[in-house]
Image (cartoon, rainbow, N blue to C red; front, side, top):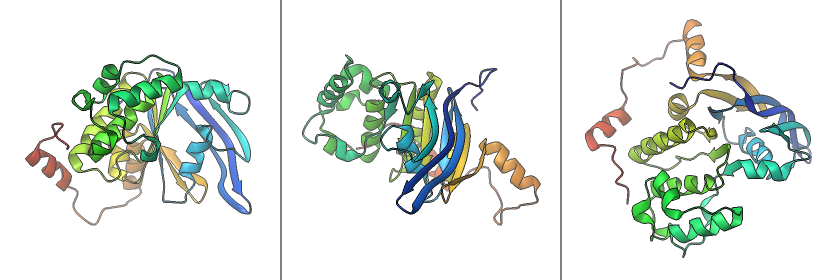
Length: 259
């Protein structure tokens, strides 16, 4: 469990955020804060407004109204300062398929105007043995770890991960969880979206549930669950101390062995 410093400082503040596409309101007045040094989850069904909200904070999309500050900078007037302080996970289409991982790190370092050693960046995500491999030849888990390495090139204060474990096998997923926790423990704030509630429960210090363009609840996973249980809710199936994924990991091991 992650413990906050005595005073929780917001590193992202979103107030009354609205985003309309013509007559359609994708985001209908969302307000929340993300604290420095936490893993914060935005959870909700497809079309709930999660990705739109993230893209606006990431300066990739214009808001209709509301205010956002990121690390003290206003999204209206300080877009460039915000871009320098955040790391955004690219989708696979953003990579040149015929460059190897070392060459891609050099390319991205150049785009950010920083000088980063490919070995140092690949070491952070346990991919040093793949330095000469092409992106297209990596396994799913390796691709995700590499894309997270690219978010760290500019020493960001905050990284944004949009459904980082979709499609991964249980071992790759657990390895990625460990990596995300390590990044948080080294002082980087992590904002994540996921469809996997077990993942949010294990990883996130706090979560916000988004539905129909609104935030319908925001709290720690533990507090949400305790409140539901104290209201008299009971799961239909007996809750066991492990689940089938734990059995799979225990039987097969969790060492890095993808691809």
